[in-house]
Amino acid sequence: MAINLLSGVNLRMTKDDTHINDIIEIRPPELYSVPVVCTNGYPVTVTVKVGDKVKEGTLIAKPSQSKGVFVYSPTSGTVVSIVEKFTPTGMKCKHVVIKNDNLLQEHNFPEMTDKSPKELLKRLAISGIVDANFGGSPTYLRYTLNAIEKKFNLYVTMSNTDPYLTANECLTLNRTAEVVGGAKYFASLLASEFIVFVFTARARQAKKHLIQFLKKHEPNLKYKIKTISNNYPSDNIHLLNEKFKESRNMFVETYGKKAFVEDAITCFSFFNSVEYGKPNMYRVITISGNNIIRKGNYIVKSGTTFQHVLEVVGVKTPDKPFKILNGGIMGGLAEYSTDISCNLETLSVTFVDNTEYSEAKESPCINCGKCVAACPMNLLPNVLDDYCLRRKTFDAERYGVKSCIECGCCSYVCPARRYLAQRIGLVKRQVSRRKGGSK
Ligand code: SF4
Ligand code: SF4
Image (spheres, rainbow, N blue to C red):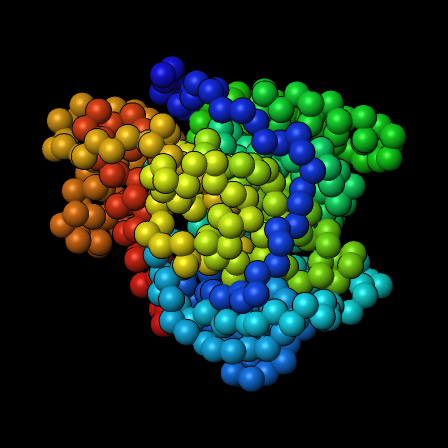
């Protein structure tokens, strides 16, 4: 396996790509079990009760204090229960269970006639769009009245670097107008002078396609194209490390910084919210894994269980043991049950069989320092891991656990196969929830 720690982990590309196909909406399940809190943990108030009829897009939870998220029903149907369950990132929160009536009734936001930055900000705030890449917070939190129209640059990542994730690239190829349209709305919010579309080197086809699209349909748009290496971790981090050190913290807390980074998926969702009044209740995600029959990029609504996803995509050899990852092969979090629901932070679902993961147990740290060299956020994963194991969350916080982006590079390079990213990620979420004063 090729490893280049100076500029990220350079993965051997052994996986067949899934990005060429179109985006398919996953067959609707009979029941949706919708988590009503995002990972930032700020509390929400459930606005429906058992027995209520809802439409696709009906508000089912709203923030009970600032920084919370608006949650919308993914289907028309009836609320049959409200239960406590775990989310894919290990939080316990209320889930609104809705029985799908297949009537396809919709509730949309009013049409936007005024698309000024202030009105766009209001729409973003209620849209339900959540950052999957920025620690699971509602996207509007990064766009405040202090940020808008301040000529901040906008970077849009149009491809992924995790070898199993291709959703951004797929959207760029298949939903180009919506992605560019959403990027233009974000650029308008920020009064950006130009938009920088960022591609990984391997996303040649998507880059060529976008350039042709812009020449034909957006001759007046001011934009730049940036190509970054294929190395992992993510495109955003490379972007920040390479040229924009001043905006590095923006990855975690974007307030007041100079550059804003979005991805194709977020632009796509924002466009649909502004243009068609669609509340955000789904995400385009990559479903992948060697043992999966119908790998691809799917529209998956919040509240769809992994079990349902598995039934739709099909398994080649059902007796072969497999694990479910919420996320890609590098940063994905292993799930313990197929009854967990995808949420709006689910970047991908990866079903890995025993040809793709090792059953090796972790062994004690040998202090080799490889994890430290690999960490793109300049953390000390070995030290953090020790604090996490000893439940010293305050010390972990002092050592920057909240800056961890859960890229998985530390675990990947560790010769002792320690579960660094998983433990550090867990404590990071505990610390964030404590700060969020959640539940
Ligand atoms: S500590 Fe976090 S940011 Fe650093 S390598 Fe590990 S998972 Fe990535
Ligand atoms: S890479 Fe693994 S063994 Fe090496 S210092 Fe980090 S935790 Fe310890």
